[in-house]
Length: 140
Ligand SMILES: [Ca+2]
Ligand SMILES: [Ca+2]
Ligand SMILES: [Ca+2]
Image (tube, rainbow, N blue to C red; front, side, top):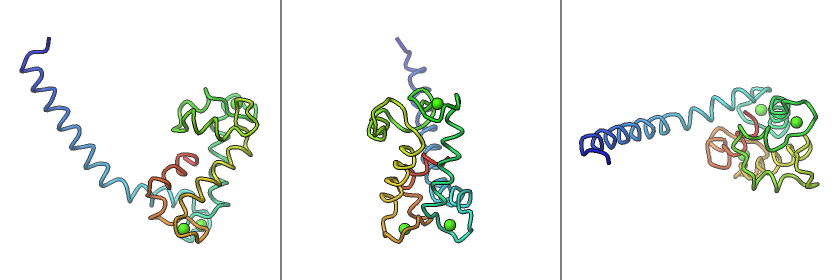
């Protein structure tokens, strides 16, 4: 059993860690969107269009495809935030892997979901939303 002292120290550490995490999150969120946008905004117009998103996604796909067979299996997707559920949904031909066209279809869907003002591009603010970050996960 934990002594009261250990417990107090543990709670204290958890509290401090939590506070730091909150501060880091609050500060990181808008800047993270801006930094990501800069990375992928190849025509430097300050927004991310679908062609730019697809280009970044293709590079990401290639880096994930570690056995270079042109498809991503669940093991290769292990390091990503793409969960089994989204994987199964994105795997349109149900062969247990994602090929590039299936991966890009997922990018298209998430791009549409993130483009809340429907202007065909993802702004800084749109990229910082939950839907925007879901898209970002496919690109970075
Ligand atoms: Ca752009
Ligand atoms: Ca593969
Ligand atoms: Ca938009």
